[in-house]
Image 1 (cartoon, rainbow, N blue to C red):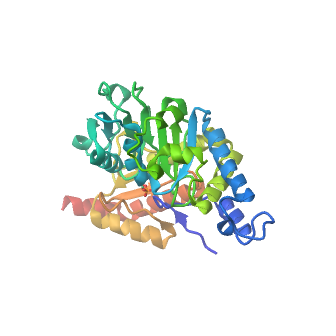
Image 2: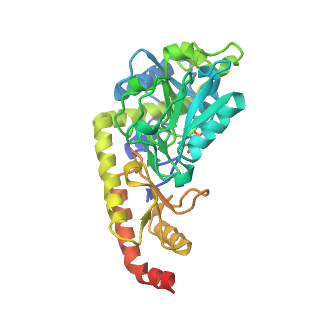
Image 3: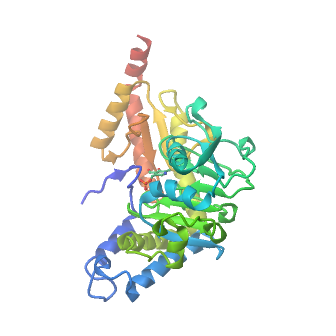
Length: 368
Ligand SMILES: Cc1ncc(COP(=O)(O)O)c(C=O)c1O
């Protein structure tokens, strides 16, 4: 078996020990005579998995009983719609910070059901940075302030979060559990699982319980956070396999020392890559320094032809998933929690070789 170095943006690399344990338990889970995928979501063994998964999330992120922790379907995209339905009341507007593709999608969805104020917009700077806290001026009476904490496509993140009067809501899909954050500063956090905490097909939602009470009666029962909170995410048949894998992934994070250890490893990996990008004008990092993501590192090369060649030669060398998002092009290395340091080192070695090989031709072409 030859596993590649996986830089996919999501679905993305999962920790090898997690995949091995899942393989081990695939046909028969814990002496039950069946696979997790074959058991009732109302059974005792699955209830234990569900409870352990929630307990792991609470422990790793330091989440108090003031918050509900939910495992929902529909990905992070359904949260773009459920959030305003649940937290914005009749006649209220919600504040949105526009840092790029995902923040734009969230605010577009919120506009379908009510009023939205875009209180900061990075479009004029080509979405190359997140705002500093002092740049955020919320609208009096806003239902909440929404941010995308890490823009997966642009490769930028909030290094520091603003302090807001209205509840702060963050889409943390591409950086959940990659660094220590103080959950108490947020009214709600949500994330698609498929980058840092499990397979595709599930979203993690952490929502302050009192905010769930805002939901108007006109919202369908299934779309209310309260419905799922009252049933411990078992209102209907959940994605049992994703909950099981999230439990294994969070066990793995815990075994490495939790989020503080994860954050240290992630900073080291990202720094090693940014050092190469800063070391030569052959590489053109996209994000402004203060907003550089530790999860999605994005850069350009002197020409689109070289970018294509880079992706092709990298793939031939066992480095996959480096093509930038189709909407922006360029190169993107997604180096989530499960991307090993060895993969980043392999990428760096490849980059050095690539630069040595093409540097002169690139600048001759550019000059001539
Ligand atoms: C920051 C961010 N938000 C939301 C989404 C949408 O997630 P999903 O595909 O789970 O709906 C993505 C997907 O890549 C993302 O990166």
